[in-house]
Image (cartoon, rainbow, N blue to C red):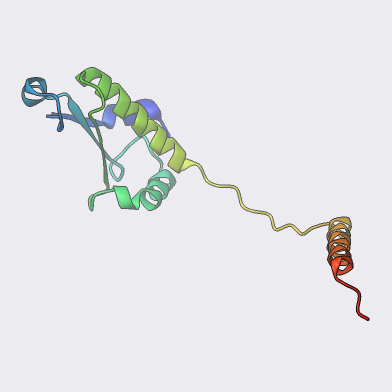
Length: 133
């Protein structure tokens, strides 16, 4: 993944924020919408595109575009920084391939210890009963 190329491929659009804020919200476009086309990206290899396409399938449009929005701050520049940071984190997190799980089994001593503990617990409970006459 080539981060500098990918950041140059990002498209931004400033839109009006929703919610409370009165006159400021109604006249200023401080919310930022980031869009990134995974399919046409030059900063990703074919394998990375495939991996992102699978892992982010629920967040992509039909054309393979990832869209993120940020309206946390009143500043357009701050929202742009935040959405870029969030985008980079999402892409990096989804490009990591999880390690293969190695099947393991408990050691003989662990099995023996567990069975001994079960036996002790059983005897403890049996000893609490009233003796039969």
